Length: 180
Image (cartoon, rainbow, N blue to C red):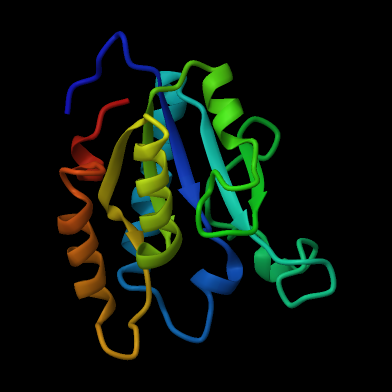
């Protein structure tokens, strides 16, 4: 995918946090997905594209209290809190009740590159919401993950969402071929 000089891009990393990445089940291809996300962070920085990282939290005092370490981004993720935009969300949609849209508009972002967890929840919902908000959305097919559901293996969930979202909501691309 070629970069357009008229397209201002940002990377959005969704919920790469301790509770999900290091939960009771290992996410599908977790090591490869993490490496791909870190590669995309490096590509974004090299191109001067902003990096946004969402943390899913709940109310104070709940298991997902924003101060609980399970809601913090995993250590291996190469997000830099001093230069990247780390924000809290409380819903699957990264735009709902956050200032993400305002921050993207302030930077004239019109293409949003989406990666992270969990494919069938926050990644799917945010892809659809971003498309509805008028963004050109790129879902990096090998940089989002989930765990098995009770009826569908994680690998099939990921493949299904890459196929279903592609076209009406997103363009799909692989880490190695995406250019910021």
